[in-house]
Amino acid sequence: MSLNSIRPWRNIYRRKSRQIMVGSVPVGGDAPISVQTMTNTDTSDVAATVAQIQAAADAGADIVRVSTPDESSTRALKQIVAESPVPIVADIHFHYKRAIEAAEAGAACLRINPGNIGSKDRVREVIRAAKDHGCSIRIGVNAGSLEKHLLEKYGEPCPEAMVESGLEHIRILQDNDFHEFKISVKASDVFLAAAAYQGIADATDAPIHLGITEAGGLTSGTIKSAIGLGNLLWMGIGDTVRVSLSADPVEEVKVGYEILKSLGLRHRGVNIISCPSCARQGFDVIKTVEALEQRLEHIKTPMSLSIIGCVVNGPGEALMTDVGFTGGGAGTGMVYLAGKQSHRMSNDQMIDHIVEQVEKKAAEIDAAEAAREAEPAE
Image (cartoon, rainbow, N blue to C red; front, side, top):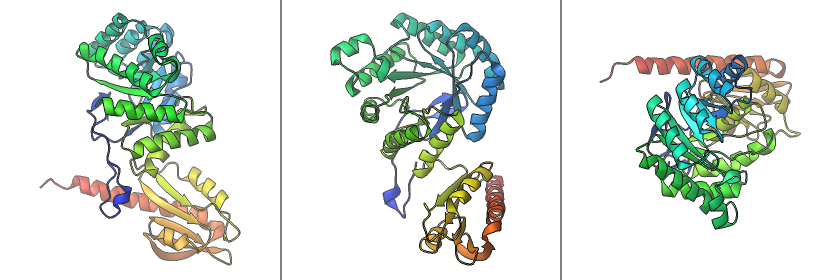
């Protein structure tokens, strides 16, 4: 929940959903909105797949999905699950037996697409395997693969068809006394996806997995996802997110976190507030921010840093950040700590100095948090 009594216009009231578990990660209820991505390695290549999962986890991924299109993939999944630092979702299309094999291999969750998994009997077999092996299930409705009868009924993919597809498969799970499921209703069209998600959010209390599917490359896909997911999250809809980009999975995780951070829904790492730069800048803002983003990737502690090129907005922004730097004249700028002017620093030494100050502040925050956790309960 993102609530602010001082600035109520920042408040986000999350939709009430029931909570399920994806391995060790709670999804729904009052749990933090989790961030997911998906590997793009050959799943049967265990080393490559585990390496990509580890990189995603290091970037902040809470859950990683792995495609299991064939028997060699599900055979490899057992070792992948054993070596993964985060819960693994097995991505299932077309062949229900892969879902059963994935459950037996230790997947935390099975993602099934109602439009291509097969008959109700086959879905029931998947449910039985999920029950037997403690898996949750994601019902993954996709505008591009709706069931034939729904396309005939509605004429084309539309929000109503997607919601109806999702509800039909929810009923199958519930009729089989299975309730550990979440649902997604994805489309590459932002309007279609947003409308479908609003419809499914009103129709069920199941946790919702948000995504704009096949969003595009890093830049265009980030923008589409930020618009679609950002608006839904702002409305309180969404319990876990995956940003679908034609890019490195690590980039998906970064974008997902940035969307959540911008709404105050998750806090991880350094939130850099920086100006676009102009002729007033006292140093090269763009190159400085690029360097700091790379140099500060290792910081996991939630904190804020302002990098502003001149004194027009710099002091005001620095008032609200843990560390700040504002450009001045004569090759120097002002360093701010905890919102207050601290000392001047030359531009040619500023990057190393800011990194040092951020690391120091992160250590202070971590120590204070550890001390709070160590206090005996009253």
